[in-house]
Amino acid sequence: MLNKASIFVGLMLLCCSPVGAQTAQPRPLADLQLEFVNTRYQAYFHYGINSYDDSTAGWGSGKANPKLWNPTGLDCDQWADVVLAAGMKGGWLTTKHHDGFCLWDTTATDPFQPGQEANYDVASSDNNVDVVKAFTDAFRKKGLKIGLYYSIWDFHYDIRSGMMTPAKEEYLLEQIRELLTNYGKIDYINFDAWQYWNDIPYFDEFEYYKVYNLVKSLQPECLIINHQYESNLAHSDVPFADASGGKFLFTKEYMRPTAGSDNLNRGWFFGPNAVSIRRSPEQIVDNLNQYNSLNSVYILNVSPNKVGLIPEECVETLKAAAEIWVRPADIKKPGENWGHSYDVSKNLAFMKPVKQSSIDFSVRDKRALPMPEIAIDGVTEGNYNLEQVSRTRRAMDPEHRETGPWWQVDLLDERDIDEVRIYFRTDPGGPKKNSYSVIFMDEHSQIVSSKSIQREYPTASMSVPAEGVRARHVRVRLNGKDQLALAEVIVLGSDEKK
Image 1 (spheres, rainbow, N blue to C red):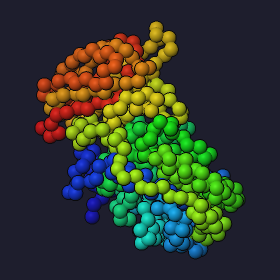
Image 2: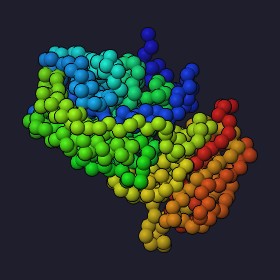
Image 3: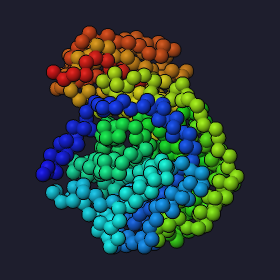
Image 4: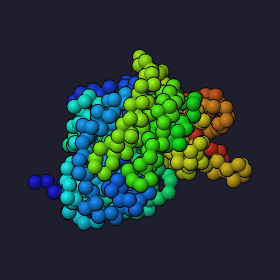
């Protein structure tokens, strides 16, 4: 039998392997986004130990006794029937919320006890039904789309910013693997609490490329929908935001596929503060129409009660909304700027580890920072206002601006590089004229070659010949004092190790 160390080594090899190493060619991202947008309306089910702990205000503490978990009449078939009657096309289940309690019997290794299985899950209660299996079976049987929510933040195992360890990373990756291996086809995996806010784990502590490559190696057509508030593809296949205030949170100029969540009840989980209905049928339809007009899917949370059923008042409200909602006609083909701008399988830098010398402030939402991953998200557009460029910090006073700001990708192994294509910020507010260096470094971070280019606005992109130089790291540096703003960096060459 394989031991835990062997399992983890295999898992990491999958995480870091090239994207697209599958026997069947997955559909292009734009086609998957189109299919998603045409669902228009789906359900969220926040359900977990919080539903039984009346002392919480929506978020559990991670300390609740698993024995609290006690659904006496769980019926996911009823949930699916409610979704169908509401005119929804799918549902998303909170498999693990911030409290860390799992709705399945996880076999992942306990981060605090090497060699032992984690036990903060339904199997440690007196009702050990696998809710994830019950949910996926019921929704698949009714022909509905299936989404699984998973929180990176974990109060039970103290998974938060500044407290990440290799054992905690292994735990997260093992659980994601379980969810995408044991329950058949999963249409969407919805990550939450993985951003620059509060003490949530940051992307430089738990790197996105590992999760992206793991997900795509297991289920290539599973859309990653990250609770990130970003209008780009740096950490998500479909941008997603919590819009429980009812307001559309993305700029209306961003007409690419997005999704936003809202609450039917007055709280995410069933409890004393979440029993009453928050949205009228008319409000639901108004929000649906607003979101759908912007190519966004409306994800409405419905809180199952302690029995494990959707309460009757929720059922009736959803039915009433369905009676007055007119579903839009399907969009026939993806928008020209949907999905990726080019064949990302050719880019050696796509979804590899990246960093930059500093990070600027956000455009709109404080959680959506101009991260270095934006420059390898498969989109070459360089619009600042649409959050399409990674950006280093830019002080208002020119004298205090950063000297020689840089962006860098780690290709994970040395590669023979033929060319680097750089796409710049293209809106009028960016730098007008600058010199740049493209620096190639070996596995020891020693410089093996360097090329310089001059770029003047409005030139959108430039090609830098590399002439087969062998390197592992590629750095783009602005020569001078200004802000480095990159839309995309494409590294072309051989993907073979030597």
